[in-house]
Figure 1 (spheres, one colour):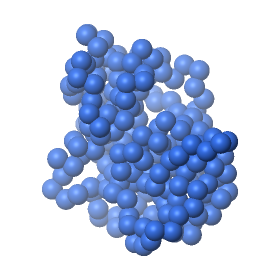
Figure 2 (cartoon, helix red, strand yellow):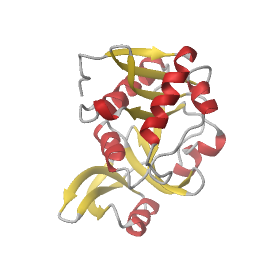
Figure 3 (cartoon, one colour):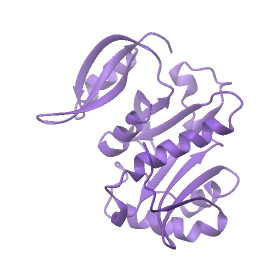
Figure 4 (cartoon, rainbow, N blue to C red):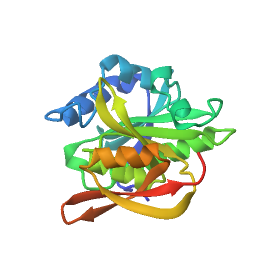
Length: 219
């Protein structure tokens, strides 16, 4: 997906911390932690420094959006062992993004996903495993991740016990067998994920969002 071309994109650094924190707090206003994880000022400082790389999108001189690529992932967040993926494979996390209300509807969330994927893959000597977490209730988030080549591999508690899809890229091949499940049916989704299926696509049904699952043929 192409990024909007009337905005300035550039890497962010420690000097941008105040703008990133202000935008994050603006976006989080009114959102519950079961939908989007609130970040601390210290975490954002680390992502703007030694533990990550952050891409910023500016409208004039104002930061309008950002996306974080985390390359120092703590063991508690590492999904590889639980998914049966070799733990020596390079791992990076898409660790959050925010888009200012004035810039919503322009495809920036998806464009930031694509930009971070490109950044991760360009810098890697070995193809990395990329992952992200997304609340089932945050439909735009996981829909955009699916559209950029991520698949849902698990549904588990994160960040104080809130349910999150664990989404990885690249997506494992599937056997062609598919089943559609309502976003509001976590029990059936968990059954399929535990049985070796993964979520590969989203569609809208008469009663709300639907996640399409397929049976995996490899880990």
